[in-house]
Image (cartoon, rainbow, N blue to C red; front, side):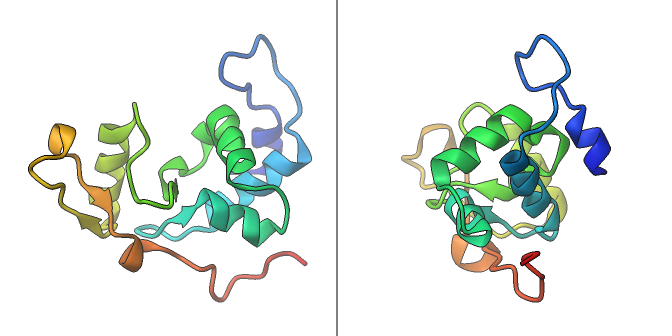
Length: 129
């Protein structure tokens, strides 16, 4: 996605078009770098950017992430994003993201991401520094 189209993206629940904050732009750029079938945690993205933390990245993804592969930025425990589990699961299965089947006792029997196999460290990518 081009910077121009992201800048004019209306945030969820917003009343109008606004320019994307610089930090949000950087978070979304990292999300777009994550290869199909791989994931980074919110903390991984913040570490990559050397700015902010998991909560700040999560906030950016909640407000602006709909225009990028949001399902590739995840919780560190591999639990699927509450309220978006089925949509995310469709993406993970389509992309071949490694999953761990849910225990029978798990509510809804929704699998988790196999973080040991799916986590991407950004190897080979320039951080833009």
